[in-house]
Length: 174
Image 1 (cartoon, helix red, strand yellow):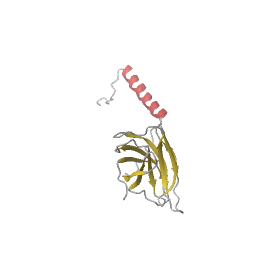
Image 2 (cartoon, rainbow, N blue to C red; image 1 turned 60 degrees about the horizontal axis):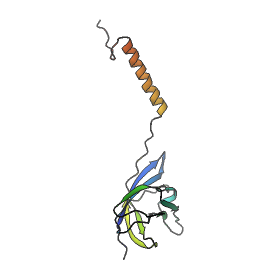
Image 3 (cartoon, rainbow, N blue to C red; image 1 turned 30 degrees about the vertical axis):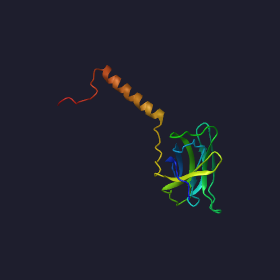
Image 4 (spheres, rainbow, N blue to C red; image 1 turned 90 degrees about the horizontal axis):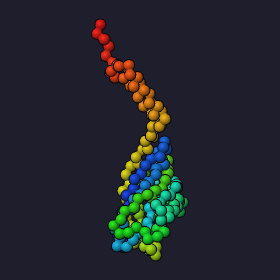
């Protein structure tokens, strides 16, 4: 029988730029095992994802990505190993991420498979994480034009106040 999941992973996808096929997945892991969690894996279906890149993890964790291979077939893997004590029981840790590119025409799956391993690399739990739809990245306004516009408006308001005029102008009755 398959091991039960006693840990969970929350995934937040974010679209990157103008390319709707490239998504950054940010992960937070919660450990519900009786012992510290020292390794987990997120599996990316080989028929959906073309590449995985740019793995990130908090200090004390070592991330690695293995790209999906549709010829084997073999899913892509985002694998993270604790370099120290790992994640204690009932604790949550974020700061894990990976960039994935979908195949043209492929839709992101509704969930991703998860695997959790013991210190001696035995599978101790598996499950899946619901995958919400990616949030489109919103470009921040350019700082310099925004600052110059605000400065121009403040200068205009100050000049009007110095001339004794109200900030709202009403035409004189005819």
